[in-house]
Length: 367
Image (cartoon, rainbow, N blue to C red):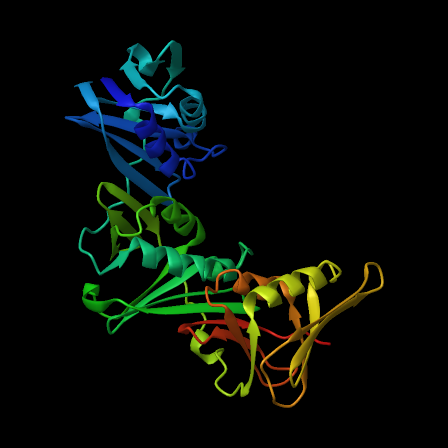
């Protein structure tokens, strides 16, 4: 095998799948990329047996073939190379020579036939999503999934398709984020719901460079796939039943507080500096015309901020995790946010007037 490929193209391809390769796994081959050269392109593939990704990139293929190379070492070398053509030559016993400008490297590989194949995935698209839509849906729900690895069903996002609509939902049991969008005519499948693992979503975000690009989504047996041009990410889906999130969304939170997002965000950040390290609780005292944010901890001290709001209802006080509220504020694009409340024991529903199809819920804490 002998290939010539521009450094920037090569680095881009390696970067897109580098996060999948296992650096300290039980199988050494999983810490490698599989590179296969054919006709006028090179394929770069990585897997950790749960997720696999492959992309093709234009190259001058002098002779076809396959090699494996340590993912981290190849990535680190390519990052430091000059912006010139990279020349790869396969030698005996799976060694690879790499040349670029005046740089020379000899790297050991492993037998390419030992590299696990990508899981079988369906090319039949169930729905098509623009890069822009996919990015927005993941960005606005990703923070709400659970970090607790023992609660596997909450370690990812729910993707639902129904009646030309698509939804993405994340929850960790203390908060929830749900976004609904219209698919228009790009919905091909029947009603369906799919649990996508966190790592697959993080890797998918790396692929979404062109917001105008169209991603096709497919499902076959236990595997889900996102395809775009010469790129594919295949992931095992999470088994289990996602909680009935519809039951959690309050319908009778009649107290609506309108507040400037930017002012609110900065004030809450300041008050949260003295919040309890574990609970992150901030007290919200809401009256007609203003909201007072306070924290009072013995070890750290006290903080208080008063903000003008558009509200003329009855007074209400609620304790909320400041980090959870800030996570929501960081992804809402509108200038004004709406806190929909009922009483101190009920959850807070955060929305905005500009986007009724995005909702986030934060459960209350005992004052």
